[in-house]
Length: 64
Image 1 (cartoon, rainbow, N blue to C red):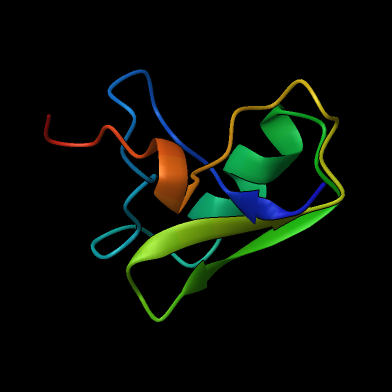
Image 2: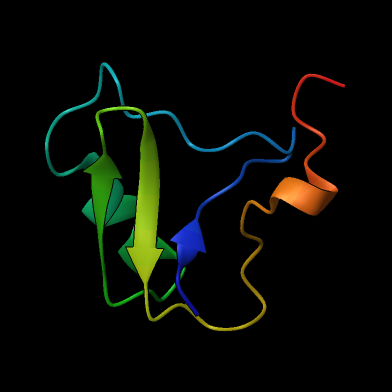
């Protein structure tokens, strides 16, 4: 599946101040095929296994 990686706090992985390879590395860590820093704000990953938690507007709990 594709989507934004989320941490234990339910927030998207921020990449604003990270090196250019940060998101690709984080995505491969969870067995994703590739990833990038979307609009310099959050890591978006491709071809991840279904067990990986991704951000969803309906179930968003970041900051709550």
